[in-house]
Image (tube, rainbow, N blue to C red; front, side, top):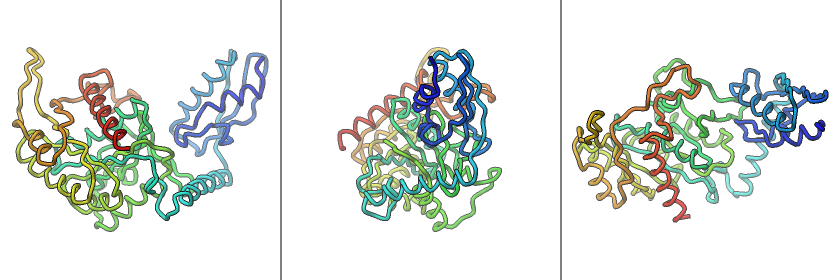
Length: 365
């Protein structure tokens, strides 16, 4: 027999995708009415027009049907200003408690005892596929069951939202920002705060301030890995990241061309001078595979990645072919122009990179 109590107990396992909290714990479930094998209830969203409304509805309906309900009717509302303020105060209180336990004034994510592993993805120059590597690495780690965040720190040339097919903005509850979740990865980008692809004309200190907001004002929750897509080169933003995250690890992306590897060595030298561990080198566009005969041929030179890894005293994590994700309908909800499917050759290569990185990070924990 279905009861109000059994419905609420079952819905404790349904989580708000942005806050990663039970919808019951958050007080989102209201007005539960049982009529035989039919259940009616209301779900109060954190903000009106929540982009994840359909996902929440699906989770709620499926969970209640597992109790034996034949029909489930869900209506939606939105929290009042007072309820949102109370929720924001609760989230801030949790962050303050985490700060207190860390015994410092830095955000919990950056505290010395934080369990989150920071991995900066860097390159010496643009056009080598650094952001594509960062996006696919983050999703590969999430597919492996890790809790992953991704910061698009390439503030002048942000591309992560486009690569992941993100067309929504972060939810803001008072002044607490909830990152956008896509393919299991929590994402923040300067692109969320710029209208119509407007160019960013800021000086270094303003950029550094924005990066600090990404750490202090965003409710990340618990993360195993936080991937940072750095701007190419060794400019202000890259330097700010190195100073903000003394415990960060780094992956360098290059093409096999000698010049790309040469300039990437400067980014690697910067990492070493700031005592960042270099996890390895990813050589992108290493070869192209002939669709007719399967022959693999280099088109951008050879040996750049191996030489760079040797110079920096690290390993060559992978040599990735020149490729592009399969075409999909732009209206497909899973459309992401820069993401490779898990069952594709590139998806499997990124899974191996993710597994190797996780192995190295665990060995040093």
